[in-house]
Amino acid sequence: MKFLSSQLAFFFQNRTTQRNIRLLAGFLLMLGSIVTLYSVLFHFIMLLEDKDYSMITGFYWTLTVMSTLGFGDITFTSDTGKIFSIIVLMSGILLLLVLLPFTFIQFFYAPWLEAQTRARAPRQLPETTRNHIIITNMDLVTAQLIERLKQYNYDYAILVDDAARAMELYDQDYRVMVGTDDDPATYQRLRIDNAALVVATNDDMTNTNIIFTIREKNPEIPIVTNADSDDSIDILNLAGATHTFQFMKMLGQSLARRILGVNTGANIIGEFDTLLIAEAPAMRTPLEGKTLMESRLRETTGLTVVGIWDRGFFQIPRPAMQISATSVLLLAGSADQIETYEKKLGFYHVNPPLVMIIGGGRVGRAAAEVLERRGIKYHIVEKNPKMIPSKEHYVLGSAADFQTLEKAGIRQATSVIITTHNDSLNIYLTNYCRGLRPDIQIICRATMERNISTLHRAGADLVMSHATMAANTILNLLKPNDIVMLAEGLNIFRMPLHKNLQGKTLAETQIRKHTGCSVVAINADKQLIINPDPARPFQDGDELILIGMDNSDFIKYYDRLSPKGDSLFSKIRSRLTI
Image (cartoon, rainbow, N blue to C red; front, side):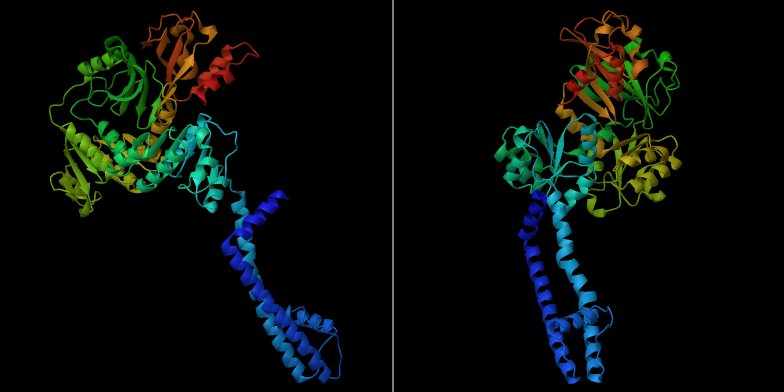
């Protein structure tokens, strides 16, 4: 009853509903007047035929004829009565069978269903909500972020201003709350004082308004936002944003850093205290064609190969695994070890490289800025003349046209970066460029996560998603000292040493074999031992730093080590969640 009363209150408070109720009442009043008129006329026409009926009978006959139930015990015998019957019958078809159902559905039933839907949409979070993430916009970035929040048991709430849209997301099993993003009371209902983070990925002006509104209620809560324009960065920071990113620009920069440029050195993609994680392409290096054992990377540089990317597929390294031209090594080590790798394998090419960028939007321009700083020659293919600021580096035309590609240098280019926001076009261009140049390095942008594998099958050597990169960046801010996400599902994380592993060496435990995770460092007495000696025994108080695709497999491994009934799963899980 309480829920029904709240629905009724919400229903009748709406101005549109009040107007619809007035219209429906007016129609019913008109219909009642017509029925009454017909009943009176029925009485008088029956008197002309020397028949006398009561007014109740008149209403009975009128409703029987108008509803087309048929004639029964009461009929007219005169032509006047039959003509009147026809008029009543035709008006009944129009009013009762056509207009009344339409009017009732349009002005009452449909608004009532909508009111039920709106009343079901949550309008505040429970008072017990703690350490949750508030999301002010549902887009590709936040959709990816939510998947990761679910993986690590973070609570969240999406703020939606439209009740119908909120119910649509609610039915898709998202946690939503209805409210306007420029109302301080909305954030009070979102329990802003107990939240861990706010993520605002709306447009720049809306983000600015949201940040000012939030700061009115909570001056301290961290706020992460995205800036579309360079000029908006300072404005958003002045409004009170804690972290302001340009995710599109970051994507372009990341794409450009992956090219085979003037050297084949390692590109740092993650940091965990003093531990560095880097990617190193094997193409055109002495590593190409060798096995990991033959490469002797650990002996010569001190670095550990913790994984190998090969056209989007991550593989756990094995000594007999062969390094191909499309392999990208994932290396873990210190800054000195990375520098040693650069000196030994960061060879300079004899011929200066040429990079072709397809698409002159924000991503393409950001990639060009990185290449400009590195002194790498590049050409941008763009078909919109309004997006071409100068003719020095730009080629006007469609990338699907061979003459345009030839003019941009497809025959001489060492790498091509495809940056359009249309995944179907990117798949087409990837396949086209791979057919023209089987030996060229192709780096591609993906808008939708589901198209990453398709782009790899089309011939891309590396595919990066704007949504994945942005979601990883935001998640890394939540627990910078516990979990660092490097790529799709690839994480660095901490684990306390299990008591049953004390005294055993890394080689004896065979952690990589059992869990697929690599121990890249040990935190012993507040000192980080990077790439520890496999013969070093684990000591009491050691903390393991691992890298792997899924830390849940490692937790299950710990459970198997625990005595029956003494599972460490819940204890360790509590360290990995808020």
